[in-house]
Length: 188
Image 1 (cartoon, rainbow, N blue to C red):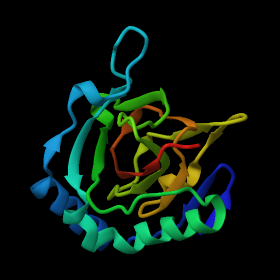
Image 2: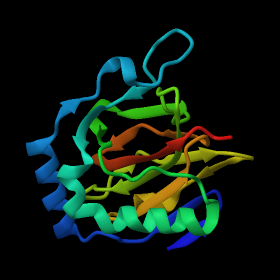
Image 3: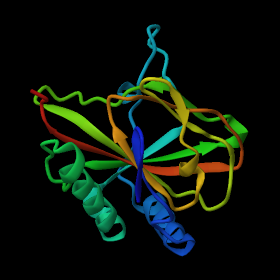
């Protein structure tokens, strides 16, 4: 675990065996596909996201990732001190970016649609089973940086949700990740 501004990074938090088990479980037990109306859009109301997102409730996958989520709360308490709600009923976003579809996600920020909550931290877990080409994550705070560590299979990062970010088109293979959004009461 380390802080590489502007994100936290954990290397190989999951083994390939664990990743395969999680992927199989999610594909067989997800709750729904993300509704198009919830995807980030540009000024012409065109989706910025070119990939399928499967939503699965955290209680279903908790047994696989509970310790990872707990680590995120520990880092928050030590470094950001954001007022966060427990991660108990939220949905997790399982994204599959495919090379044959040039799947990508254009520049966006993560934000809550609820009037009394704010999205505070975004967590990405690399659940890819094989290396892939493209699908690079970029963050843009003061400057644009590539998050190369996230390409490591089984790695995890966490960053402030208001930071602009994007995923470049996958050109070969499949990029799979699980996204969690840590929320809490509105910022004051």
